[in-house]
Image (cartoon, rainbow, N blue to C red; front, side, top):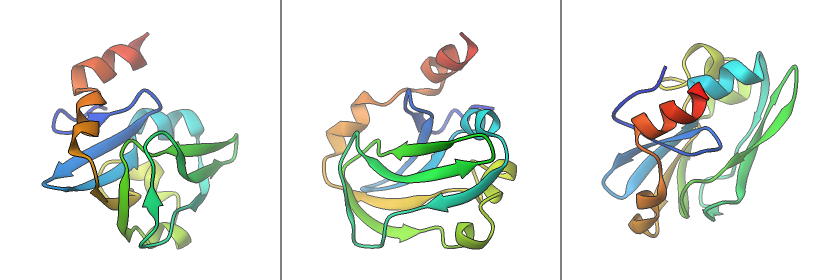
Length: 125
């Protein structure tokens, strides 16, 4: 499943833009490939993220993967529910399984993200 109203990265993160605040998560494709998610490590509120660097990690039964930040900015909110129920990402990657909300410091970074059609082409190959 790929939602048309989101932006995507080649490393399977999604970005929902709302003014200068973005919500980040991992895609449905990514959670499916990882399998059962058992732990999520997220940054702290107030942390500064840098585009292209790890903002945390997701641990599944099969693997541990870094979550790569698609934007630079300050973490405003984290999805605290994932501390107790990380498997929410498996059942609701785009809704209840969001990871962090970030106040972006450079909106031009959004221009490098993929639109839905381009992301679909990547995961269908």
